[in-house]
Length: 257
Image (cartoon, rainbow, N blue to C red; front, side, top):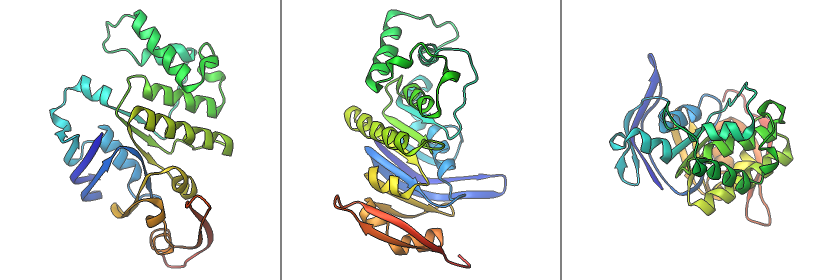
């Protein structure tokens, strides 16, 4: 899946978030990083169709406005930062509802098989009959990812998916995202604050600052002392591990940044 953004602009009332933004993303994992209010979440919402920006979004060279709504629903999937479900439904029932395509939808064997296959693929079959509100934060996040995959999308958009998760679940989650992105040939775009997770798992990093793209490219070329200082206003020590992955250690803040 090739995603192209052309002359992208969006703002709330008189406040412009970003203006005439342009970039291209092709397959694999792209992570959006940047300080608070850089525009990461807003950009994801615009790509997901939650917000209506000016400009053009192209999927594989085709303007998103030319797609039928039912095709867009299958094409892209968006996991927001705050995913909450207050329901007594089981995990299986929640995923099954994700298959609904109209108010008059009726469950069939094919739908049941799709849900079973997604649960099996993610290794969470044991959660199928558990109530969603019985689960831990990490388990719920796995279910939300299952929801995102239920229609087999080509574009997966995720906003801070590791929020509230311990280190083990953070790694498991990103290992899973990496696996499904590669195996399904998806394009995955993730907004993230954790620079070391981004360095470890991203194929491409887009650095955003004040609604603009400051830099983009592989982690090793983007995560430099100059970038960290200019964008985040801190001094940091950056080392390269044995796998060639940058490791960022914050040292202190820089005043007046």
